[in-house]
Image 1: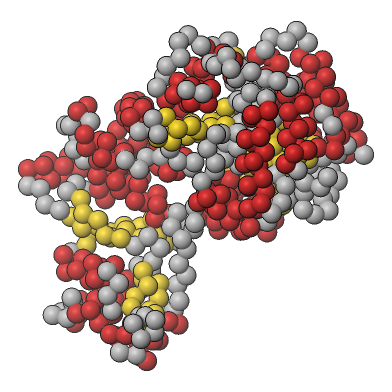
Image 2: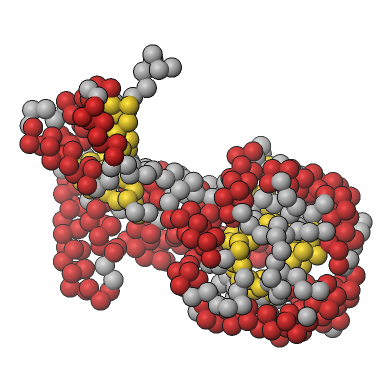
Length: 295
Length: 258
């Protein structure tokens, strides 16, 4: 299944483009950097500097649009005006990839919508599946192309709050069912798998993530995310802060993923405690090297 | 409540017992809210400093739960909130600073308007009663009691300009006292030029012209507000074009057109 809209170079490596790097990204395009990922909501403004910047970036790089606020697993539908903003951004930026997250983020409390602005876990059951597939289809219909849905790092099991919010399938079974039912693909975030395994106090993290990677059907995977995290634990949890270079374990598992899935569009994320543009793109160079070795 | 409502309610109302996992989501909401507000309200942050700004943002985030999808839309009621906060009743200018920051943010996000030099030739072709000014992106007029322009200038100075900053601080204190003792409204015109929100203080005479312009009046009606002083009319017209406060002249639609 093709989740990208063109014949991509091989390897096809990108980085998350964040505000402090805008100018350097335009001035210094590294040889092996093919695309940049933007967070959709940062470019929702109807005019002004961000729109101009997006036009400039589009002239130099392929763009991946990564939504962070649609919360497609929420009970409430995405409002038409937000869907319109998202669709307009996709139409304007002509991205090579469009993605969102496997999460919910809002609910009606006392008849008032509250939007957490976060990526919150959903139970892996049939009710969640129906809900998210319906919302994925609405977005796909609006943008007229398939979405990639990113696996989540989660600190909470839904049953900790509500006993009825039980899983009735594994996470990977849920991904597969979601892809079959909606036609979307998976954005496989290897760092999220690592963070989850660490927070679940799994004895052998590498083996656990490898087990998950081997369980995923390659036909559904459309992109890979790589990232690192800072060592500071909060309340005993590793926080998925994308605040450090890609961890060595993540690199190791990336090489396994390349063997399992072939060379896929791969993105290095670094969102907090941002490094220099050179340090960031040295990470994407490393991803390029591994992908090149894979063939 | 179902699971999703329980989790959202726990995040916004900081409830949920002793769950350390829940605390991460609760903290994320607060920190994301503080971060979003600090981006949207840079002058307010600069004037009160980070510790007090965090207190304001925390209280605001609790009282006005985020409902928008875009963090940039979070903060719409901050100005009103500051007016009502007892904690800041001795700092009455904060509400106006927040209003100023919010307007600047949305002016910078307003739909683009393209300057058309050629369009001004219409002034030679049609009577001014049939023409209108096309305003710059986000053009608006607002009135404040406090010297918002000086607050803004103060925040633009970095600590290396300590002498200049000290001088400005003294004039700021005096201007604040004057505004409290003898309150009178000062009119500001805000607009966007070259991607950045601009502003300037205007005399009542020029403000009348801007009021008319923003009211979609004809060129004739706008200029009529300045007709007692042809020199000022000429100056105003030159100025609004040079500063790109208007970007074009266009034919007004009339009922006959429709």
